[in-house]
Length: 501
Image (cartoon, rainbow, N blue to C red; front, top):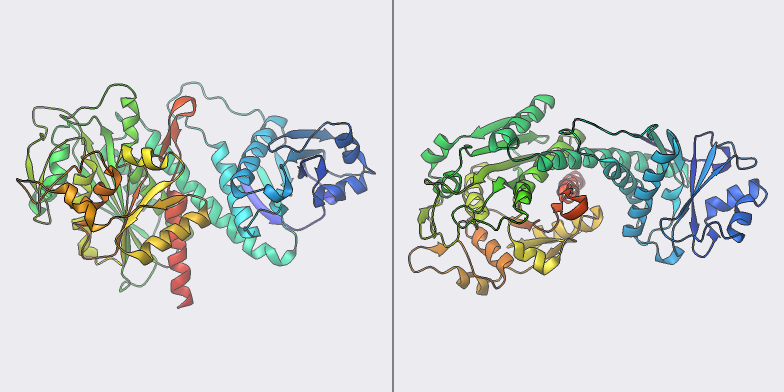
């Protein structure tokens, strides 16, 4: 869809549709009042008759409103004015896009970007509207033989802003929103792919394809043979039971000086996780194709960063692997020597993500990173702790944790910090190795992060557990595209800080 911004009066818009808000109870927004005045009370008369209460998400489509140039006027219920928050705003935008798609309006001028949203400016409202609109239009039908398309889909959306001086910032909001949306769509496409298509090699091919399409990206890969030479035995052990070879894919984005230390984003890429010898229950096992949600989100974030051509260096490390039961599979009781030299006793082969990540976290030391953020669908315990609304954030570096929390608030892609205190480390004690790969039932999300922290002593590190946020189950099953907005905002903020210095 095409997006743009302008500043003008609603009654003068020559468009297929003008979109304005109505508050509860039956109260016109400021922009809607302008339309009501020029139409000689047409809108207020409808409200008095009870055609629209103004409850959140209510829609009323009007044709041929007197003295209005637009073919249609869409009245959108926005709830109580003082209670309009960011969550409700995004839901209203999504519902509006869905309604416009059904009306046959191929273009629209939207005045919802002028609504007052608590604590949010015009940049945020325009960017979130773009992301909500694009997200609402997303479909995954690549593998269907019959594809249903809207009869006359919405193709152009113009957001109106109150003053002309807000146009430059609003145009930047569209640029950022489109880049994030493109990254989220890529993340969702890759994550939604079935595991017979999306293998570690497939992830590598998508990385290579992206690098070929962007001059500022370079692709490299670490094969199983190279992993063996490097001593990445934990990573290799997880993939040993699979016919699909493990591949560590690396995307190098250079937007800054060659001397600038990079940010490294590490994504867990278990393209299917059967649990290995500690096999999972069969119910909902199909959703274990989403165990590469971390890798998909890093891929999406790298897409957004390359699209925006940010003046910063970023490396995306996509740790592709498959965990299957087989005669060659690793076993509970095995002791593995990691790339760092530390040894790990395997108590459960379904705690495999941390074994793939620990060697990857050691591997990225060679880049002398400014900061490393790993992203993983790591623990079911995170869903118990935080549900499906927030990703779990853990870090041994307070400033980095605060940066990520700030990015989560700005982007609307929420995260919540959990502790990684030394007291939790004792849960990883093993009588046979330096540590075990499982800390027990208590604080499972935290002890998993504690395990990873033992491999991150040489740089600032944070961990995002996205087990509850990477995908949805049920009737609307599918990848969400999170935390692409959070990761992109984090890098955007780093870029802004560097420019201020």
